[in-house]
Length: 76
Image: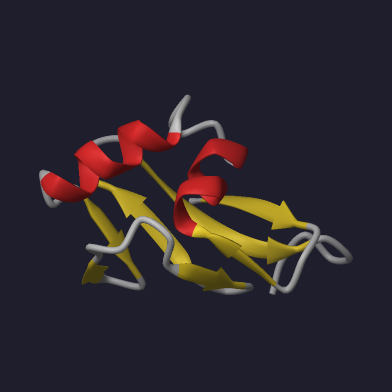
């Protein structure tokens, strides 16, 4: 699991996945959600603009796993 530091308290799922380098565009997130390929904290996700906070874990099936981390420490 890769830890990705954010500079704000929360971040939208689509923005986070772009920030992490997991996707190139928000449209890709929409497709992955439609194909039920994304989970957040182990639960299937359906909302592209879901707000993520430090400690949340996002996984794209067969692609990778990322944790939202704080900018100060890099981890939660």
